[in-house]
Image (cartoon, rainbow, N blue to C red; front, top):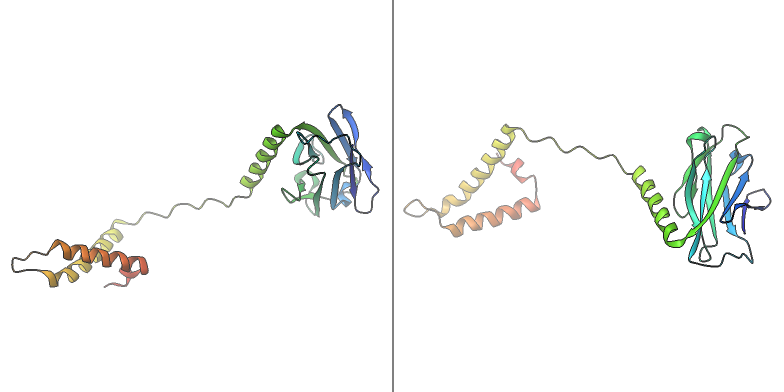
Length: 207
């Protein structure tokens, strides 16, 4: 029902191990750069209500990692394996539609097992979404610590500049009783906000 092909190798057919499960075994996997997995022509798998989930078993591990899925609407997928100098057991694989990961290749006798399990499409979509979310979290940038709070002396200096700026502006609006109209204060506040929006550092430029 399923086939796989790698560059320079013949097509390999999956071996059915259970009613809804198949397995490929790839020898000398350290020499593999890409694997294309596809539904065979005339396959009986034609129901879009089911999805064939593709799992890779990490070298030297019993863990199977979910990478992608196939169904009649997406009958093939290419998985990219980048050979690096890292150890095979520290690397993993990726569907070109989902993730790009590495396969270490320190030896030539690496064996790669690919498992396929057919699941109902709604359940498969949930599993694929969870895997993508885990992958995205693993590459999120480190959270930057919040800026250090300002020292009291800095806050006092900033407050003093604001008061001085208001005093200089409102001085020309003082009436005979020494009072300033509220309208004048509103006018200063509006202009102050505009200046601050246009130049957030303008208070630092004041004496």
